[in-house]
Length: 260
Image 1 (cartoon, helix red, strand yellow):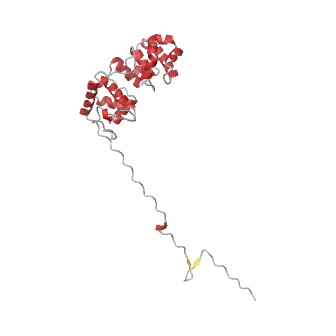
Image 2: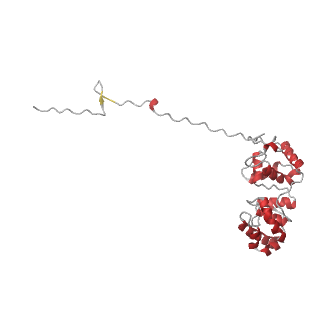
Image 3: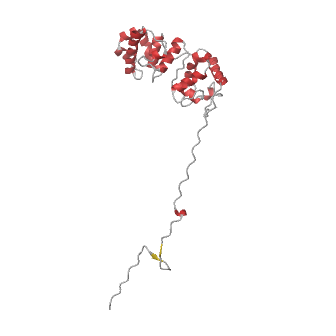
């Protein structure tokens, strides 16, 4: 008797009642994982309202009343030693520079005397200051240039001062203001912070803050303006914990996180 061999049914195709192969049911939209809802774009904090000219005048009137004759804290004997002190103060505290330069300036208060000491001796005097090796080299080089090109005198223009080794725009502004009474605005980290935090003269870099402050500060305050702002940033408008409770201009300040 012949053996009957039955064909195995294809597992992939399922016969329907009508005899046709039924297709696999399509996945429903509900079975698909839902896409994460896109987050709404974060709103930018509104820009603080610019200071009015009356508010700027009021702020500096208060600074002047509290400290009529502010002084820079770098010790110096003449324009030359001021220039050297400012060059040495880069990335260093005024107090640290003063400790080193008291003895140095006692023996070298002119370019000629500084050259006579020599780079190695200058380096020994200032070795407690950061980057002292490079700074000693700059002090000798700028002294040589003052003798050779400027008759041993500190030049009285920003462009000329900026040609001296180790001297930049801030150095030039400090020297022009303190030595020669020019209405310049030297912007260091303190002034940069105060200009931005208070909203008085916001800027992305020191030059923007410098030009912004020069634009809004009345001429009657410009001789001492950068000292008032430096001292305010150094002792009141501190980087980490600003002392808003004793700030002279806390009612004018635009900082949204002020504590008063």
